[in-house]
Every structure is written in structure tokens, then in C-alpha cells.
Length: 66
Image (cartoon, rainbow, N blue to C red; front, top):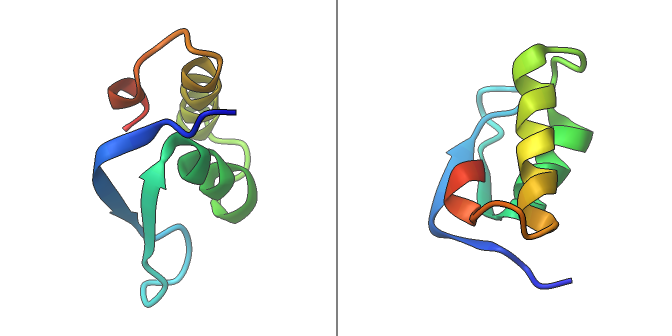
């Protein structure tokens, strides 16, 4: 699978304030959303996962997931 990298990384805090996470690619974003995000059933999280999947499938460009 080809890594779909972002032009600029994103810094997120999926849990504790002192735990920043640098997201470099769509696969990084999907991993954070699937494993580390604290709100498991939110509509926003599920939509973000769906967009990451669409980018991985090649249906959308990485900027949409960013």
C-alpha cells in the first residue's frame, strides 16, 4: 500500500494534554482514530475514519483527510 502523506504534518492531542501526536500521513491519521481517539462512537470520528478509508482506496486526495 502506498503511503498517502500530507504536505504539512498535523499535531493532535487524542487524549491527555501532554501527549501530542504528530500525524504525517493518512495511515497515521487512521491509526490514531482507530486506536487512540478517546471518544469511540462520535459521528465526527466515524466520518474521519470513512474519509481516511476513501483516501487509502484512492477515491479522494490526502488533503481531504487532512
